[in-house]
Amino acid sequence: MKILRILTLLLLSFSVIARMSADELLQVADKFRSPYQYAQLDIRIDDFKNGTIKKSRNYKVYHQDGQSLVDVLDGADKGNRVLLSNKGMYVAPKRSSRAVRITPIQRLLGQASYGDLAGLKFSKNYTPSIIEEKDDVTVLELIAKKSSATYHKIILSITNDNQRPVDAKAYLVSGKLYKQMQYDVEGELLKTITYKGKNKNKKTIMTFISVKDKKIPKRLLTSRGMRNAIR
Amino acid sequence: MKLLVLALFLAGIANAKFVNQVTIISHSYKVDRGGDWEASNVAATLRDTEKTNGIVSFSGDIEGVEYQFKRDTETDKNIVQKLFYIADVNDNLSVQFGKFSENWQLGYAFNPLGLTDPYHPANNDDDLNEKLGINAVVVRYSMEDVHLDFYTSNDNKERNNVRGHGYKSQAVHLNYLLSDETDIIMVAHNKEEVKLGVGAGFRSIVNDNSKVYGSFFTRKGTTIPSVPAPIPMTAPPPLTDRTKDGKQYTHAMLGWHWTSDNNFSIIAETSQDDRGLSDSEYQNMNIAYLTLVRPVGIRQQYNFLRVSKVMGEHEFSLARRMSSDDSALNTFKWRYDINDNLQLNASYSKTTGGADGEYKAYFPDQSNTQLILYYNLDF
Image (cartoon, rainbow over all chains, first blue to last red; front, side, top):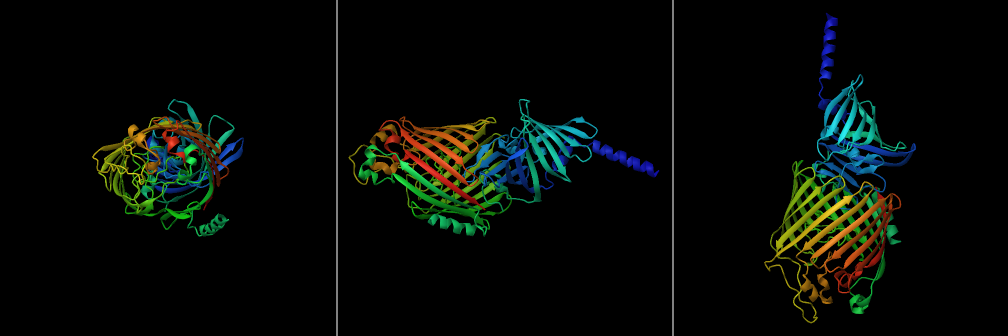
């Protein structure tokens, strides 16, 4: 009787998991990027060529309500700010009072685009559907909800046991494969994302150094407020 | 030497974390001057033919009070570029007060909605003429797709009706997200001496590489005077007050910006400004009316073209601002990011066109060679 009860419970739990919708699967996968509703992330991007680091940059990303404000911490662009808001993506150079609107797919460093750094949560900008279920992974097709999303389509693989992201392929509107991503998770959080384009000798690694709970004023998430002091 | 000592002193202050950035600028220029502009009575009104000057700027925030101070060795002045505080009332409402530059600019070269920054530079490629802050209070309210600003200012300057100094003003600025690609701006601006003016603008992303934008502003009357019918040269030159003439003055601009995937960029803009001089008024201009020479030009119609290419640490650009009389200001610029802290800017500007053309006759200082070295210390 006891064994029967345990078996019944196990069957029920598997069926609950099996019934998770594509949206729910994607939201769980997004939590590996940041568990907080309002988050401050320290991120480093290393650009590799033939296995050697050519350039590295550090960033501070403030993410909330599906929007992100990025502070460039070093390099010639130190002091620049990047904003991914509901109204679009902007770059504000440090010596300019004017923010310039850009598209998220524009290159930031190496194989990483501005949208890769600022657009943390897929569930905000993409509509998922399950296209394949294998023994250990589920494959989701993510279609951009808006033209302001970084990519038109992403094919994302997540593990069945805890919805941890494994790898992804990003496609343009033309259907062309633009880049591939590989995810490395440590514990409950993403450790690195590796971006690769057509050139096999080049890759870019985004490392998540730390994440903490932090809320910033909403006025900073506008093209005019993005240059103000963050406190 | 003085600049070095000052910079070291500031670096010491920076260690107290009150300072986020110190910038030291060394600026050299040589003006290409010839013809009538060499005459002593004229030359005396213009700046030196050759000069090297330094600017030290430091900026930061102290408990949320943001500031930027500058010292310019050419003018021997200390300048408060900005000094303000933003108080957050709640998640959607904030109040900003102090001295700051409120930028409503949509385009690159022309700015019909630039009502709040009368010190705007003639040329956005002119790195040294940063917009100076003015005393103002702005109440900002944000909603999902709408941002609303209520603005009031008093720059406490001596009145200069051509440059726009010395006027109290109030304005409402609304930014509405029409779609993912397009936002709309609407403005109402009240200024001393003239009627309430209204304006609107738009900015639209066409595709991944290009965007279009435009704006206009219209008002009855203008603080910028005009010139009377031809008279012999007298001093001081009489000017025609247009604040109460009941005429509608409109300034409009349309632009297009394209950027390739490999960082090649083109900006093209056209502008029509009723406040400028008509052809017949321009014919009446003579050297006595130099006070009418505004930063962007004195006529009504202008076109602007800029092409640029970024190659690693280098950016090359060529800009051309064209007047309706076919004279033009052409600027070639090279920017080199030497390292993370040091940047070199070199530019060569040349005015072209006939001797009576606007850029030849009235903008002699714009034909020049400049070298600017920036050293940034970030903390």
